[in-house]
Structures are given as structure tokens and as C-alpha cells.
Length: 177
Image (cartoon, rainbow, N blue to C red; front, side):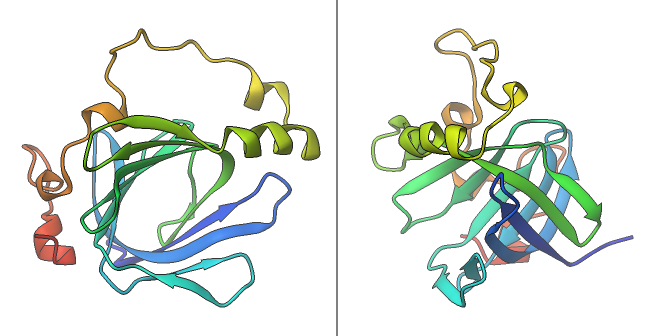
């Protein structure tokens, strides 16, 4: 069964709707499920109307059983990789994926390749406000410095979809160049 459009719904720990937007199903491989969004995709935050419309194409990876998602953005976005720390993505049906945003983000700057952690203050505040359980705040074993991570080893967006073994082409399905 092929589902062309998937609704991505991200909630906060208290259950409130956070970000939600449609994406096109691109394919699935050993890394997880890949979705793409063309220029002009409308992202909404909470119950508000449209918050912004994308000006760059993007591809998003939803790994299986991992506590993160990865967003790969083409230019003109300043960040080429944006990894959200989340609960593992859940698929209530093939046309919907949902997860809980756990505030922390790991980002890579396109121009320099520098990687930084964003929203540590929000995580500290929400940890108390929402009463994050131990499974959310307990330190996980850290990879040794220099170990591969989605932010440090991610290809440029122009290479996404053309790696050996992938069965789809981002450039064909989403108009990426």
C-alpha cells in the first residue's frame, strides 16, 4: 500500500498540539521512513492558522525506535540539518506520524558545518513544568566525541535520495535540485 501524503503531528509533553504539516512519502530504508516537502508547504503551530510557508524544499527522516527525527533543508535555509529530540515516532496509520517534542534540538549550520544544541533552557523549564519522567531525562550513554551522528554525517540535501539502495529520488518527487 502506498500513501502519498502523511500528516506530521508533533505534540508537547502535556499533549498540546505543537507543529503539524503535510509531507509526501518518499520511501523507506534501513534508516527509517523518509518524507519530503516542497517549497510552499504550510506549517502550523498549535491551533493557530498558518504560521509560515516553507521557502526551501526539505526531507525528513523518521527512524524506527529512536528518540529523534532529522530534517534536511535545502538553501536558502541557514540550517541544513535540524535534529529534534523526540519520543520515538509512532504511526497510528500509514498517513499519520506523531511524536512528542522534548525541546532539545541539534542543528548544523550550512555555511560553516558547525553543530550546536538549541533550546536547553526550554528543556530545563519544561522538565519541571511537565514533570518529565526519568526515562525522558535520564542521561543516555554518549557517543565518543567524533562518533557519527545525523548532524555530523548527514549528506547535503542534493545527495539525499540518490544514495545506493534508496528506491526514490527526492529530486523527482519533491523538485529538489
